[in-house]
Image (cartoon, rainbow, N blue to C red; front, side, top):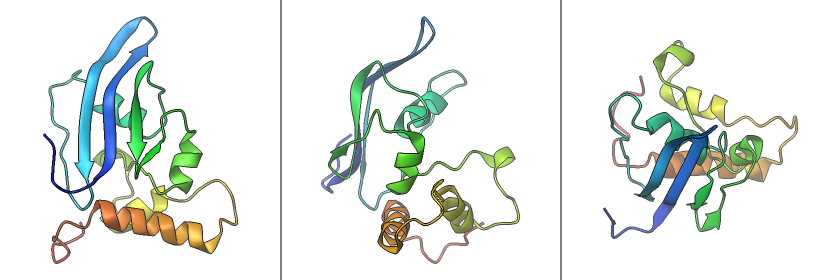
Length: 141
């Protein structure tokens, strides 16, 4: 479904394999700037694999992933983090004592010790843009 808002994330016809098994076939989606999207499906439907492709943990064999107008499929996971693209695992793998925001920011730390201040601000801005849906008064936990 296409939105009137400019897409911040575009996944176009991606395919991904684990060995010889096709895990994703022609998956496409758009996430508009400022929107919140849920990826739903049955076990084995490809939700985690889609997120692994988006975050750079698995390279697609076909298709493309664009973020903020730049093609990002093929980027390393640490480059994704430096660009402000983070993935927070489901409940059993997060830090329960931290807020949602703190978990997202923790996921945004790159391997390099001294990332330039502007890059850190850009990463925080990308997180804010992705979650700016008018729900700022909702509790973070």
